Image (cartoon, rainbow, N blue to C red; front, side):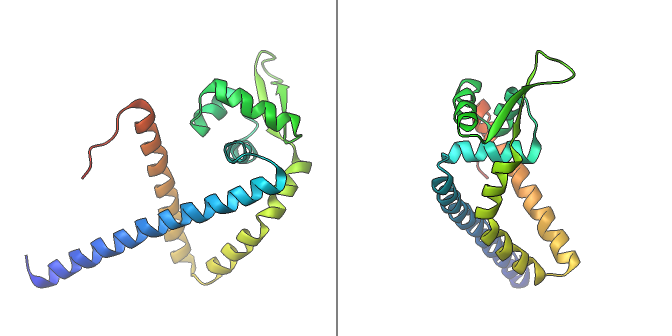
Length: 166
């Protein structure tokens, strides 16, 4: 291998490591932010995650939410009970199939959560303003693919099919 291609490979490894480290830093900072938001509204971290999924993908059946959140259905029952008691979600019968219960976020309470995340959302808007269209498309694609990789890794762990290390 020539020294030029070796340097390129080293640079690529270094950049890949920086990206992974930055994603870990982001995860930690978002966890801290989510804890602060949860403390402000008296909602546990895992409950806040479920509330976000309901807000973004709902209305959802409890079983669909359990799959999305990666939690056991029995655990989810407790989460939904707490969220419903606190006025964050409503459980309602599906209009097409009355046997099915759907969970939806209550919009009047959701505004409270959006307000608490407004500082982060404004900061992200400012960061994105510094990138052109093609760079934003690249970043959006990377984030989407990283989210899929995270979902796949979680599913592999849940099913005991962990991938072999490279």
